[in-house]
Every structure is written in structure tokens, then in C-alpha cells.
Image (cartoon, rainbow, N blue to C red; front, top):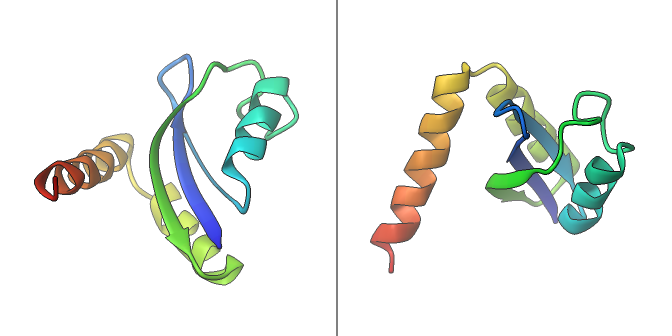
Length: 88
């Protein structure tokens, strides 16, 4: 299973990525080895995740999300949070 994730960096910027091991990837980001963009921008907060059956699907979705504006990404995050709250 592949996980698409959006994390908020210390400077309030957002980073979108994919992985099969979210905890391991977050650990890499914290160590400064996860991605050039996130180096030195921790700590991080996971704001959003989606599961995908294969890397291809996760990569396509990552590309779609990376094209969104900052506000549209926050709208996506808020809508998923709203859906979670409604299902409780």
C-alpha cells in the first residue's frame, strides 16, 4: 500500500510526498535526509493522508495535489477532516 501525505513544515509551508512507510519517511525528513525541500524545516505535522494500491496511482495523485494552490491544499485537508468528523 502506498501513502500520499501532506505535512506542514515549521515555516507553515506544505510538502506533499508518497511512501510505503510513513513513520520511516517522517523520520528521514526530521534527520534532513527525506527531501531537499524539507531539510531544516522540521518539526513536521502530518495534515493529510490517502492510501493507494500502487505507486502509479499515488504518483498521479501527488502530481495533481502539487499543482494545487496553497489555499486549495488547505481546502482539501479541511474537507477530509470534515468528512472524518461527520462519520463519527
